[in-house]
Image (cartoon, rainbow, N blue to C red; front, side):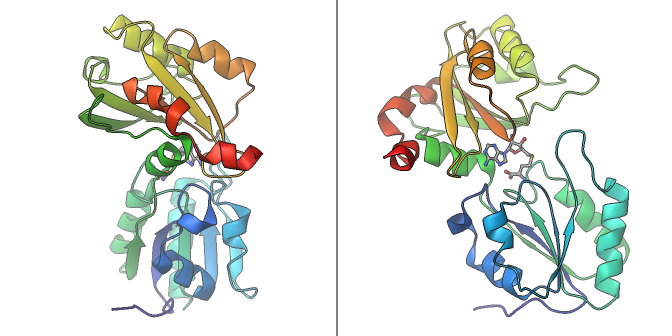
Length: 256
Ligand code: SAH
């Protein structure tokens, strides 16, 4: 079954994937080409926005650190208003809309206001970045579990279940963790992981600007500063990081 183009009065909460336009789902590509209004975050790459119809209204919703172009509540209500004015509305978010993206809150507001909606999953950063950086998140020789957490600092500290994260045979993927990287590495060692435990940080994964820095819980914070990395970055902690040297393919392709 193929569902048709975007319908007037409906909001589509759509994951745009981690950057590479080829990682859009067919459903996302079809909706991007047909929506009347597109409300997008800074994580959505320009190459993806270029696929919108030239007549579509494009609204930037912010989301860089400290730059919320629109407060979340206003954004939620804007989606309601656009839909009630009879437009087909695409709410386009980086990665997967239900993974650390506040997509759930946006859809709750739509439900509260009786606005019809659909949700289209996307390739989340963990999946996209790990594939392109050559880090199989659950390679069975190293890991049986993979945990996704947010490293976003609240009041300057990170409120995470450190005991649960500092485990062997587990991979931890940290979203929004660049700022808190020194704290994160120190806490994982404090809670029992070896100081030489492998860790990687990947900037702008799946895009031509992808950069990967690998090290250990001891060295990674300094290496990341030395490399001058900036957001968006994804941090991957665990023995699977050892496979990067053997399995990285994308950056080689980029520099060839
Ligand atoms: N909904 C998104 C995540 C939103 S939170 C998803 O499913 O991927 C934003 C964080 O995602 C960024 O701070 C960064 O940690 C991560 N991220 C998103 N795209 C990325 C990319 N191309 N490379 C590295 N990290 C990325």
